[in-house]
Amino acid sequence: MKIGILTSGGDCAGLNSVMRGIGLYVYQNIKNAEIVGIPDGYSGLIRGECRPMPREEFERLLDVGGTVLGSVRTPFKMMTVPEEDGSTRLEKMCANYRKMGLDCLFTLGGAGTHRTAALLCAEGYNVIGLPKTIDNDIYGTDYTFGFHTALDVVTDAIERVRTTADSHGRTILVEVMGNKAGWLTLFSGIAGGADAIILPEIPFNIDKIVECVQNTYASGKRSCVIAIAEGAVLDSEAPFKRRERAFIRLDRGEATATRHLAEIVGERTGAETRGTVLGYIQRGGRPSAYDKVFSTRLGSYAGKLAAEGRFGVTVALVGNRITFNALADIAGKYKLVDPESEVVKAAEGIGICLGR
Image (cartoon, rainbow, N blue to C red; front, side, top):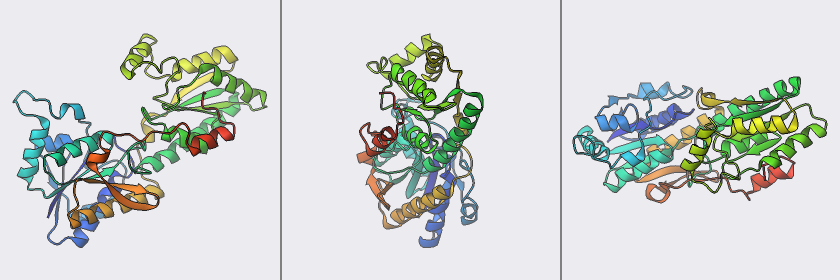
């Protein structure tokens, strides 16, 4: 059996650990197996590039951050658009899948990666997906690999910001990755002891946030820390589509709501207010112990699926059990935070403001 592996989309901790799980299972359990790595995600498959990945390479990958194969974002919407030579990217990928002589392709990536994987499946090719993203927004799985490592990093950052905020008597907004889904902001905000948490799924009211800051200082605290997702939406912006909101913010010279909110909070409360964007430190680095174990479980199970000839699926965690979902059933869907969920209610129940 000849197997291809690619990593697509944004990097995160655990990509190499998952590949290790796949590779070691395959070489341990499938006779005459051969594995090739495809560089730069789907872009490498479009170009028809691959390289051998012997067992020895996988043995070194457990706690290596990033991805040894490289990763490039290849927009799903461009996959079926004819290029200058008249063929589509999807057609090139299918042709190169055949030229490489692949029996199976593992695709490690997020929602966009899964949509493209579903396209390949629909064309009759054997694909198995693995759920990667720090956003934890892939439908059908309780968690994605990379999420828990990012959660540790962001929680640590919020805790560090708190000491600075306390020292100087400031209000500090910490912007966390998550455009559509607020899982990382919600969990890190709770774990880091934030006073307010602002999510994309719950449009926030500025008056509520201002009131929260005022009440925080009135309670005797020296500081106020707000965890805000990059995709946070003002309630006044909520009726507009995403692109329309982008133009509104462009007029203010902003990409997100963070700076705008920081300015208003400072003006209306009199508190010295700062905003900090955590950025790429959330995605980089070695995986946590949880993610190393989780990634190993996912990769090993994916290898088992290939050995059994189960294709057109993506691996998932449901409860405490590793299982799978059909790619066709989850592609194009997102798992978002339910504003009425238990974890949201728990946060509000202990006095954390969610801006509503």
